[in-house]
Length: 254
Image (cartoon, rainbow, N blue to C red):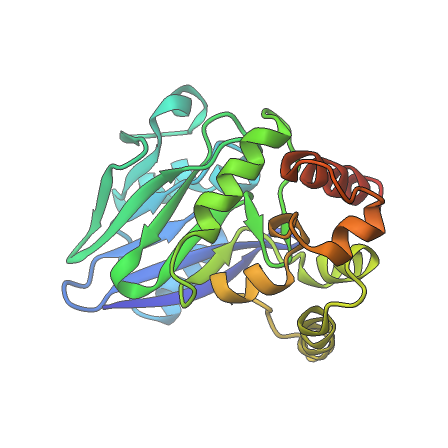
């Protein structure tokens, strides 16, 4: 029921226009700025009715107020961070259901990048909007949470059906892939994926969406159990959380 359009914003952000084909309801996820979203709406002859925010950072909410003023769209975001979501109308938490026409998204709380980060999972349409928690072959920095929190958040996303398409907040995939090869160099699926990502970027094409199945195979931040990863980190017997934390520390310095 959903048609999803990628909208490049700022330097490397993505907003997403989500069109319910049954009712013509139209949402935008994480509009960092209004002009590219307005241009995309015009190009596809769509009228915005909903705005969805995964977290409060300006590069995900910067277009909220202008878009709301111009279209009357209602803004939905994390209830536990409502004071930091510009123009918010509806606050949601874990297990809540968000409606976009006939399409429905389940709200998943996935904190650590920020204290109240959420995802929108449109299960019937095999799509999840992960903001800055899960990237293609990566994860967000831990600005307001702990490694244990991020590990839990990532595993909540990784437990979604493998065919679920992952729409994340940034085009970081090539850099993420290059880092992933430094900690899991013998992962054949990872090497193949990085080659494909290099081709796409050389052609100026996006690397999003990914899928949950592909992330399970190639995202080092989901792969704390990998013997190859543990060997590279010299952590053969460490806990999964400690392996994740060291992987994140190395990415921070990459």
